[in-house]
Image 1 (cartoon, helix red, strand yellow):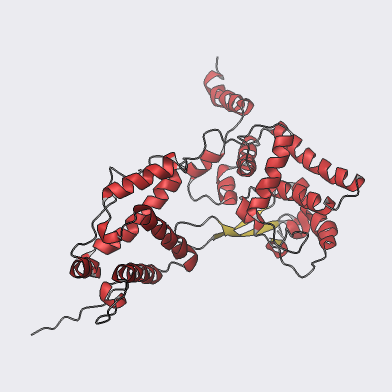
Image 2 (spheres, helix red, strand yellow; image 1 turned 120 degrees about the vertical axis):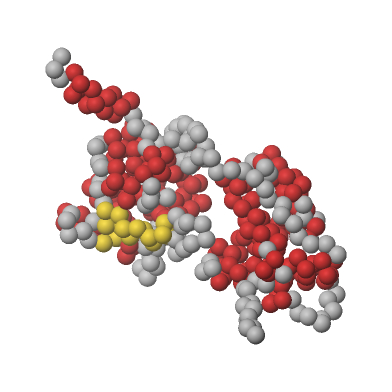
Length: 367
């Protein structure tokens, strides 16, 4: 006779429920056990707390919205919640789909027979969890880009106007002998770095001084020939992706070198690792970057469609217009697929016309 040993699955009901113990609030105890089980299952898959914690908070918010426990959730609950996210909170489709995906992951664990949550709920509450996320009540992923269609890169004229205005704020603060001169210089350099290396806000905020390094093939840039981006955009459930970028714009290198060597020390926090530090010795946060950007943009009466991320778009677009190889740009901005890079490039009419002439020239060469 062959005996098969049953392997205990992380997240299974019998691993999380305390048998023989009378609970004062059995519904809450069951729900908490479900969350512990889900956390254990995600931990086993290698996910980290910074991924798991927001998911757990979302499930608790969904519970509060429905005012029901998971074993009484129905597809109608998801329908009502999704409608509120769209019509009341005005969340982007990609965000709503992400939230729906989190609920799907949690409920799929509960209805999987291998984990035993169904029988445990039926024994305790005479009902059991069911699938509430289906293809007809969740948003499909139909296209690569679902951001605001108004978003676009800067034209070269808009970019020059914006960066000049940022520099002007430094001069004004110095002339007025205001306390904010250092912060204004920091922010002017920060925007140049976002554009000069095609960075995201969070990537920029988390830069340290030591993230810059030498490139033997570009000795003219000194210690600023490369930039090690340690907090690149992560894949879902994974840690941040790192990439090493090569410096390509000499004026941006000159700006950051001047800031690091001559301005940053005046903040008075020599031991702080951050590249962008506040006047109180903290690390500049993405929200502060956004606030300063909007203040400059609105003062110049530039279109609201321009955002800090538009500087990153501009980096890819302008390099494309300048004839830089697309594969190089793709590696620089950290995209695995060329189709993703296409989202970032909005080349000008002049570039399109020049490309058209190049394409047509061979055909009409003999005419």
